[in-house]
Amino acid sequence: MRLGSRADDRDTGMTNLKSEIQFRLHASEGAETNSTAEAPSSRRGRLPRITQVLALAVQFQDMIQRGEARDYADLARLGCITRERMSQIMELIWLAPDIQQEILEFPTNKTGRFPISEVAVRRVAENLAWSDQREAWLNLKYDSHLD
Image (cartoon, rainbow, N blue to C red; front, side, top):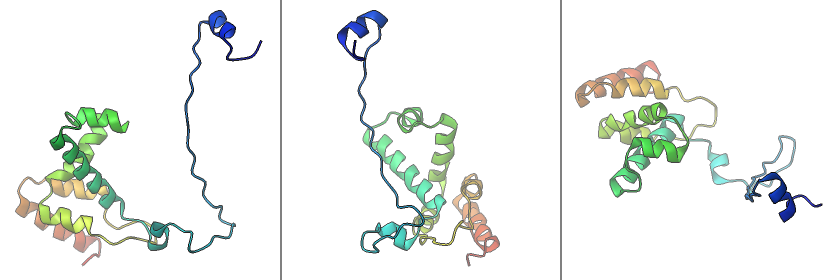
């Protein structure tokens, strides 16, 4: 008898499920690539991780305000991340608007790690007064040689 036939389902009490999975193929390191076929982001580099995470936090906050999600727990379930990680991401919303804007405007990076980590920026966001955040932000940028 063929797998997936009705008799098999009755015998085992199992139900067949169908799922569609999409894969994106990447060129191997040794493969030649056409420069016109490359994705624009691969030519320019990657945005720093902190920029990506802050943009995600802004998007999540917008989803809550539009009613697409009820709360952070709902977003955590939708994003398949823990509530703790969601809280870490959303701490970036506490940053002063000018600091958020500066982070969102960071240039792409081709060479590797960006000198400012998400953890360091969350430490800045822990300061509730925006004036204290600005001072901590300036110190962080100076220590990271961004000025």
